[in-house]
Image 1 (cartoon, one colour):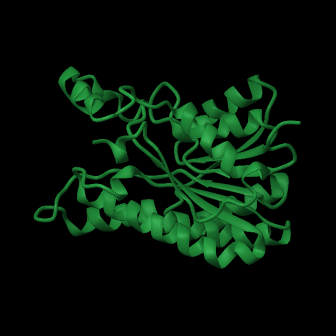
Image 2: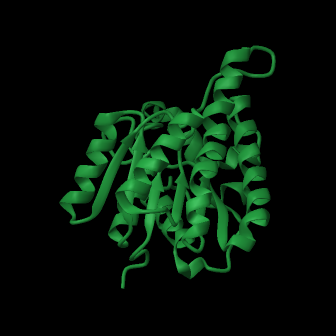
Length: 255
Protein backbone atom coordinates (compact mmCIF):
# COMPACT_ATOMS: atom_id res chain seq x y z
CA UNK A 1 0.00 0.00 0.00
CA UNK A 2 1.29 3.47 -0.86
CA UNK A 3 2.40 5.63 2.07
CA UNK A 4 -0.34 8.26 1.67
CA UNK A 5 -3.17 6.14 0.27
CA UNK A 6 -6.58 7.65 1.04
CA UNK A 7 -5.22 10.99 2.23
CA UNK A 8 -6.09 14.44 0.88
CA UNK A 9 -3.14 16.82 0.58
CA UNK A 10 -3.03 20.56 -0.01
CA UNK A 11 0.32 21.82 -1.31
CA UNK A 12 0.98 25.55 -1.65
CA UNK A 13 3.64 26.85 -4.00
CA UNK A 14 3.22 23.72 -6.10
CA UNK A 15 4.49 25.26 -9.34
CA UNK A 16 8.14 25.79 -10.26
CA UNK A 17 9.26 29.33 -10.98
CA UNK A 18 11.27 28.21 -14.02
CA UNK A 19 11.68 25.04 -16.05
CA UNK A 20 12.58 22.16 -13.79
CA UNK A 21 11.38 20.83 -10.45
CA UNK A 22 11.30 23.00 -7.35
CA UNK A 23 10.48 21.90 -3.82
CA UNK A 24 6.72 22.46 -3.99
CA UNK A 25 6.37 20.71 -7.34
CA UNK A 26 8.40 17.74 -6.14
CA UNK A 27 6.31 17.45 -2.98
CA UNK A 28 3.01 17.55 -4.90
CA UNK A 29 4.24 14.86 -7.31
CA UNK A 30 5.64 12.67 -4.53
CA UNK A 31 2.43 12.92 -2.51
CA UNK A 32 0.46 11.82 -5.56
CA UNK A 33 2.88 8.93 -6.18
CA UNK A 34 2.23 7.83 -2.61
CA UNK A 35 -1.51 7.70 -3.23
CA UNK A 36 -2.71 11.08 -1.96
CA UNK A 37 -5.29 13.13 -3.80
CA UNK A 38 -3.52 16.44 -4.25
CA UNK A 39 -4.93 19.96 -4.34
CA UNK A 40 -2.03 21.93 -5.81
CA UNK A 41 -1.94 25.70 -5.30
CA UNK A 42 0.17 28.36 -6.97
CA UNK A 43 -0.33 31.97 -8.00
CA UNK A 44 0.99 31.13 -11.50
CA UNK A 45 -1.67 29.16 -13.38
CA UNK A 46 0.76 27.88 -16.00
CA UNK A 47 3.24 26.63 -13.41
CA UNK A 48 0.66 24.73 -11.37
CA UNK A 49 -0.91 23.34 -14.57
CA UNK A 50 2.49 21.84 -15.44
CA UNK A 51 2.66 20.18 -12.02
CA UNK A 52 -0.84 18.79 -12.52
CA UNK A 53 0.08 17.47 -15.97
CA UNK A 54 3.06 15.64 -14.51
CA UNK A 55 0.88 14.06 -11.81
CA UNK A 56 -1.84 13.02 -14.25
CA UNK A 57 0.69 11.58 -16.69
CA UNK A 58 1.76 9.24 -13.89
CA UNK A 59 -1.85 8.28 -13.10
CA UNK A 60 -2.21 10.45 -10.01
CA UNK A 61 -5.21 12.47 -8.91
CA UNK A 62 -4.90 16.25 -8.73
CA UNK A 63 -6.98 19.43 -8.82
CA UNK A 64 -5.40 22.87 -9.05
CA UNK A 65 -6.15 26.17 -7.35
CA UNK A 66 -4.79 29.56 -8.31
CA UNK A 67 -4.40 32.33 -5.76
CA UNK A 68 -2.22 34.42 -3.47
CA UNK A 69 -1.93 32.70 -0.10
CA UNK A 70 -0.74 35.89 1.60
CA UNK A 71 -4.44 36.87 1.52
CA UNK A 72 -6.72 35.33 4.17
CA UNK A 73 -9.72 35.56 1.85
CA UNK A 74 -7.82 33.69 -0.87
CA UNK A 75 -6.76 30.98 1.58
CA UNK A 76 -10.37 30.53 2.70
CA UNK A 77 -11.47 30.26 -0.93
CA UNK A 78 -8.74 27.81 -1.89
CA UNK A 79 -9.35 25.48 1.04
CA UNK A 80 -13.07 25.60 0.27
CA UNK A 81 -12.26 24.54 -3.31
CA UNK A 82 -10.10 21.70 -1.98
CA UNK A 83 -12.92 20.55 0.31
CA UNK A 84 -15.33 20.58 -2.62
CA UNK A 85 -12.94 18.58 -4.81
CA UNK A 86 -11.77 15.95 -2.34
CA UNK A 87 -13.23 16.52 1.11
CA UNK A 88 -11.36 17.89 4.13
CA UNK A 89 -7.55 17.80 3.96
CA UNK A 90 -5.52 15.43 6.10
CA UNK A 91 -2.23 16.93 4.92
CA UNK A 92 -1.32 20.62 4.58
CA UNK A 93 2.09 21.38 3.12
CA UNK A 94 2.95 25.09 3.42
CA UNK A 95 5.70 25.58 0.86
CA UNK A 96 5.32 29.22 -0.21
CA UNK A 97 8.17 31.54 0.66
CA UNK A 98 10.19 34.42 -0.79
CA UNK A 99 13.60 35.89 -0.23
CA UNK A 100 13.91 39.68 -0.39
CA UNK A 101 16.98 41.93 -0.49
CA UNK A 102 18.01 44.23 2.31
CA UNK A 103 19.92 44.37 5.57
CA UNK A 104 19.12 46.19 8.80
CA UNK A 105 20.21 49.62 7.57
CA UNK A 106 18.55 49.56 4.16
CA UNK A 107 15.53 47.25 4.00
CA UNK A 108 12.40 49.31 3.42
CA UNK A 109 9.14 48.98 5.31
CA UNK A 110 7.07 47.57 2.47
CA UNK A 111 9.66 44.90 1.60
CA UNK A 112 9.84 43.83 5.25
CA UNK A 113 6.05 43.61 5.52
CA UNK A 114 5.76 41.71 2.24
CA UNK A 115 8.26 39.12 3.46
CA UNK A 116 6.20 38.52 6.60
CA UNK A 117 2.94 38.43 4.62
CA UNK A 118 4.18 35.73 2.26
CA UNK A 119 6.43 33.71 4.56
CA UNK A 120 4.48 33.82 7.83
CA UNK A 121 0.95 35.15 7.37
CA UNK A 122 0.26 32.68 4.56
CA UNK A 123 0.93 29.74 6.87
CA UNK A 124 -1.36 31.14 9.56
CA UNK A 125 -4.17 31.75 7.06
CA UNK A 126 -3.84 28.31 5.45
CA UNK A 127 -3.89 26.65 8.87
CA UNK A 128 -6.89 28.70 9.97
CA UNK A 129 -8.77 27.55 6.89
CA UNK A 130 -7.66 23.91 6.95
CA UNK A 131 -7.53 22.94 10.63
CA UNK A 132 -11.31 22.76 11.28
CA UNK A 133 -11.82 20.24 8.47
CA UNK A 134 -8.68 18.34 9.44
CA UNK A 135 -9.95 18.09 13.00
CA UNK A 136 -13.33 16.80 11.81
CA UNK A 137 -11.52 14.21 9.66
CA UNK A 138 -9.82 12.84 12.78
CA UNK A 139 -6.44 14.54 12.48
CA UNK A 140 -3.62 14.93 10.05
CA UNK A 141 -0.23 16.46 9.34
CA UNK A 142 0.88 20.06 8.74
CA UNK A 143 4.34 20.59 7.26
CA UNK A 144 5.87 24.06 7.09
CA UNK A 145 8.89 24.85 4.96
CA UNK A 146 11.47 26.90 6.84
CA UNK A 147 15.22 27.16 6.13
CA UNK A 148 18.56 26.71 7.86
CA UNK A 149 18.87 30.49 7.47
CA UNK A 150 16.45 30.64 10.40
CA UNK A 151 19.20 29.24 12.64
CA UNK A 152 22.32 30.81 11.17
CA UNK A 153 23.20 34.24 9.84
CA UNK A 154 22.85 34.47 6.06
CA UNK A 155 22.56 37.50 3.76
CA UNK A 156 19.06 38.97 3.56
CA UNK A 157 17.76 39.88 7.02
CA UNK A 158 14.05 39.36 6.34
CA UNK A 159 14.29 35.80 5.01
CA UNK A 160 15.97 34.26 8.06
CA UNK A 161 13.87 36.37 10.41
CA UNK A 162 10.55 35.37 8.88
CA UNK A 163 11.57 31.72 8.79
CA UNK A 164 12.56 31.96 12.45
CA UNK A 165 8.97 33.02 13.03
CA UNK A 166 7.86 29.94 11.04
CA UNK A 167 9.89 27.75 13.41
CA UNK A 168 8.22 29.26 16.46
CA UNK A 169 4.81 29.05 14.79
CA UNK A 170 5.45 25.35 14.11
CA UNK A 171 6.41 24.39 17.64
CA UNK A 172 3.64 26.44 19.23
CA UNK A 173 1.02 25.04 16.88
CA UNK A 174 2.27 21.50 17.44
CA UNK A 175 1.63 21.80 21.15
CA UNK A 176 -1.83 23.22 20.68
CA UNK A 177 -3.06 20.84 18.00
CA UNK A 178 -1.67 17.57 19.38
CA UNK A 179 -4.92 16.94 21.26
CA UNK A 180 -6.69 17.09 17.87
CA UNK A 181 -4.36 14.40 16.52
CA UNK A 182 -2.82 16.99 14.19
CA UNK A 183 0.97 16.86 13.93
CA UNK A 184 2.90 19.99 12.96
CA UNK A 185 6.52 19.85 11.80
CA UNK A 186 8.91 21.99 9.78
CA UNK A 187 11.55 21.13 7.20
CA UNK A 188 14.64 23.33 7.13
CA UNK A 189 16.27 22.98 3.70
CA UNK A 190 19.89 23.85 3.15
CA UNK A 191 21.36 24.42 -0.31
CA UNK A 192 18.88 22.74 -2.64
CA UNK A 193 19.49 22.71 -6.40
CA UNK A 194 16.19 24.09 -7.70
CA UNK A 195 15.10 26.39 -10.54
CA UNK A 196 14.77 29.23 -8.02
CA UNK A 197 18.51 29.37 -7.29
CA UNK A 198 19.77 28.25 -10.69
CA UNK A 199 20.59 31.80 -11.89
CA UNK A 200 22.71 32.43 -8.79
CA UNK A 201 24.70 29.23 -9.22
CA UNK A 202 25.44 29.98 -12.85
CA UNK A 203 28.31 31.95 -11.32
CA UNK A 204 30.88 29.19 -10.84
CA UNK A 205 32.68 31.00 -8.03
CA UNK A 206 29.48 31.44 -6.05
CA UNK A 207 28.48 27.82 -6.68
CA UNK A 208 31.84 26.48 -5.50
CA UNK A 209 31.90 28.76 -2.46
CA UNK A 210 28.47 27.47 -1.41
CA UNK A 211 29.41 23.87 -2.13
CA UNK A 212 32.51 24.04 0.06
CA UNK A 213 30.29 24.89 3.04
CA UNK A 214 28.38 21.60 2.80
CA UNK A 215 30.02 18.65 4.61
CA UNK A 216 28.48 16.16 2.15
CA UNK A 217 30.06 18.21 -0.70
CA UNK A 218 26.92 18.27 -2.83
CA UNK A 219 23.70 20.20 -3.05
CA UNK A 220 20.39 18.58 -2.20
CA UNK A 221 17.55 18.02 -4.63
CA UNK A 222 13.87 18.89 -4.46
CA UNK A 223 13.13 15.17 -4.45
CA UNK A 224 15.05 14.80 -1.20
CA UNK A 225 12.87 17.49 0.38
CA UNK A 226 9.82 15.65 -0.97
CA UNK A 227 10.97 12.36 0.59
CA UNK A 228 11.14 13.93 4.04
CA UNK A 229 7.79 15.63 3.51
CA UNK A 230 6.18 12.33 2.52
CA UNK A 231 7.48 10.70 5.69
CA UNK A 232 6.22 13.53 7.91
CA UNK A 233 2.84 13.46 6.15
CA UNK A 234 2.47 9.71 6.59
CA UNK A 235 1.36 7.50 9.44
CA UNK A 236 4.98 6.33 9.66
CA UNK A 237 5.56 9.63 11.52
CA UNK A 238 2.49 9.23 13.74
CA UNK A 239 4.41 10.12 16.94
CA UNK A 240 6.47 12.94 15.43
CA UNK A 241 5.37 16.51 16.09
CA UNK A 242 7.02 19.85 16.84
CA UNK A 243 10.20 18.86 14.97
CA UNK A 244 12.39 21.35 13.08
CA UNK A 245 14.15 18.97 10.68
CA UNK A 246 17.22 20.17 8.76
CA UNK A 247 17.67 18.65 5.31
CA UNK A 248 21.01 20.24 4.54
CA UNK A 249 23.82 17.72 4.03
CA UNK A 250 25.27 18.63 7.43
CA UNK A 251 25.49 22.38 6.80
CA UNK A 252 24.21 23.31 10.26
CA UNK A 253 26.73 21.06 12.02
CA UNK A 254 29.77 21.67 9.83
CA UNK A 255 33.11 22.28 11.54
